[in-house]
Length: 84
View (tube, helix red, strand yellow):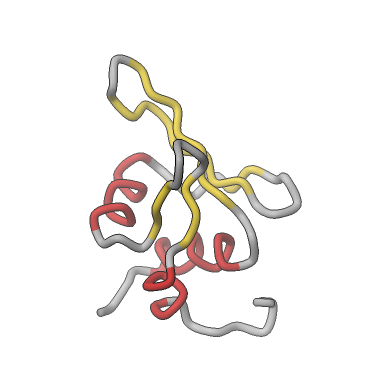
């Protein structure tokens, strides 16, 4: 499965230990924040991209916690030198 460049960038951040926090208002997703493992906010994640990742089951949440990359997401991400 091919994934876009924007999806690839988010997956790299998540593979390195980042997570996604969502802000809801009236059960609608208003904002999705991608937080790197260092605590920085990545600006390239919008609610539409979040829904796309969730629909493909690349990210998941456990017990109401933040969204993290799944095993399937790790298989889809291409290796880069800065990945750990």
